[in-house]
Length: 238
Length: 238
Image (cartoon, rainbow over all chains, first blue to last red; front, side, top):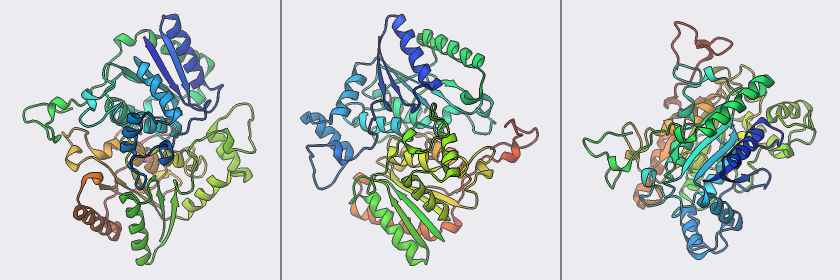
């Protein structure tokens, strides 16, 4: 299996970075091939803009998705996007490893999605959710956060964590067609003991070794909607 | 009233940019003072990193929130963050105006939150949600998207739009203490007629003129949780 870990933490000595290293070693010891895209290390540019396109189909008015399609067709994708896209295409499993910032992705990682999840390659037209162009691949979030586990879930102060992560889990990974595995959360990381950190690493090992038995999150199916995305009577909706 | 519009669209001729201009003129005609932070125009850097801090409290290990507090105390915030923070402090109403990218904020705007919503200034310790340091201010999202209105809501293909926007609405604006108004959504923008676009602008006018009567979104209240954020028995939770 080819694994791509996209990693986004500004501190190389962080626990989050150690989780990335741990996963690399474990996957390799299991015989898998691992590629790492360390966004901070490569100073990845996360801003989708006109400067992503050297050969514009419309020089007077930028429609980002249309220029993505044009650049793909003409082979004029910017080098940094093309490199990430190659890694993504080769991956059977995509892992996004990051610290939670404001209940979502750090901007550098959000911009990786904005720029690399290309229209016409990753999704497009009616190719989304279970018809997304990444179908057949799996994806999982692994992250650290300051909050404690009891602060998430029904009736808790923040509500269920997967609800807060819905734009990533469903709106990005699921939309692109990935089978999305239950995330791995490392809670309360800045405040816990060394023993608790070691336990979290052991839990991560168990997660990685057991990926084939890890729960997938339910996603919408286009089978339940007509061409205009109206629900088809009698079909259950997600 | 002081209004701050943070705008994030890469195409100056876009409908989204026209929405920003329309709001500026309307607010000014109503006697309000408007500041605009146009993130693409100023090439705003959205990446939270060590280089945000010229005078580190800990040079060997970056904890971003702690360095935010140190930089605030020592007056060593980077100039770009300090400028945005000044605008934010002066604002009675914050509007984030943007195109939906992947059911959430474009990276350049996510990074504005990552870098400008400073620990100790915007939130911190137990100062979040209804004790957030931005309480007394209001905030609203105004955005464009490609999808149509019937694709959102219960039983629809994507589910309720405010559920997808929860990390921004609750997790960022609500967390910081803002009163968060119901968002203004301009649906299906790339595909609609000029007449429909004109109608959307008229709808936006009605929204802006009626802000004082616009619904606020329910947010968690810390009154319902103890110091460890366990629910207090008998109190309703959000």
